[in-house]
Structure formats: structure tokens, C-alpha cells
Image (tube, rainbow, N blue to C red; front, side):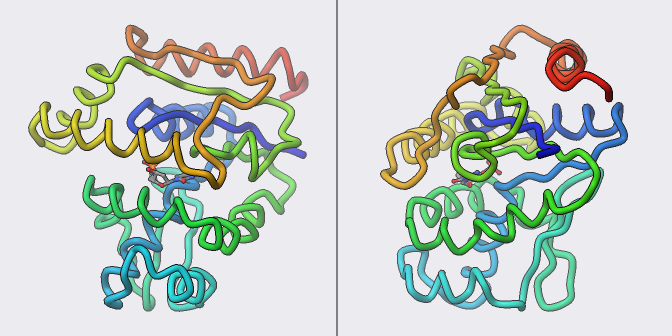
Length: 219
Ligand code: DC
């Protein structure tokens, strides 16, 4: 299986690291969070409640929306329109975290997530359960973490939001993601854990690239 997984809490740098590493190595990457964010967005647009599991499962497998790999940012298309710019807002992340606790919803998105690896090229898959559930056979698993102030600072400056509110929202999302029964966020067995609090993006990417070169070999 040609997959490297990168899991970790909100704003730990998963997307930035995946994007940069994919660009260096000529690989592709996908944010599995985009599936949950996309579903949360589509639910909002169609007036579906984030706790209506049956309706969400139907919506999850419906072809009114889709997720596409992209070198910049994993894309979401809804009714033929690119809605990517809307899904990365913190309130969509919060709704995504809520509906992602439903086991039926997770199951209904799994196949489409695994389909992202159905090609001959290497894939970096990032999220919360990529190393534990989506791609348990991946030959390299990385878990990124960072102090909560460092993560909030990154996201707040990216989005021009208040530091205090961002930190509060992230803490709530992390609590939800780590304590849910279905595929909770956790460090996969055999994962390499990297604390990114005091590292630059380049330093983290260098470290993951080194791991890829030693554990995967001929890349
Ligand atoms: O990584 P992100 O912030 O884009 O993810 C948004 C939410 O989606 C996250 O709070 C929980 C959920 N998620 C998940 O449950 N499993 C994944 N593999 C990825 C994201």
C-alpha cells in the first residue's frame, strides 16, 4: 500500500505538512477532514441536522457532492460548484466534528476515503483516524501534535480570528474528537510522534521526509 498517514489534533499542521511534502516528492495528498467538513457544509445547505444520522448517511453517499484531491487544498464540489472556500471555516469544522462522532456517518464515508489511494502513485492521507482505521496497513504513520496555544495561534492568524475564541473552539473540537466512541483520535501503534510547537513548517517536513526515505526506501 503506497500510503503515508498523518494524524493529529486540529491545527497541528497536518495539511501544511502534507501539501509541502507532496509537492517535494511529487506525490498526491488528501485531507480526510474535507469529507466531514464537506458533509457538514452540504447538511447545512440542505437543512439536515448534524445529529440526524439516517439523513446524514443518505447525504454522505449521495452524488450531489464529491471530494477531489488537489495539490493546494482538498476540494469539495456541491451541485457542480466548487465550495472549497466555505468548508475550511472554524464553524464548519465544529459541525464536522459533531457529525463525525456518528458511527454510521464514518462508515458511509470510508469507501470514498479509501478510493483516494486507488492509483499507482503515493498518497499522503491526513486526518484523525487515517493510521488506525482508514489505512491501517500504511507503511509509515506519523502523528503531529503541538501545544494548544501554538495551534490556536496558527489558526487565529490564518483566519484573522480572536486567539482566545479559537483556542476555546479547538479545545472543544479536540475533546469531542478524542472522546467519541467511533474511531476516536488517537496515536496509531507504530506511529512516529512529532511535536511541532517550536518547529518551522520546513523543519517538520524535513523530518517526515527523512522518515519516508528511511522507512519506504526508494522514493
Ligand atoms: O482535520 P480537520 O480539522 O479538517 O477535521 C474536521 C473535523 O472532521 C474534525 O474535527 C473531526 C473530523 N475528522 C474525523 O473525524 N476523522 C478524520 N479522519 C478527519 C476529520
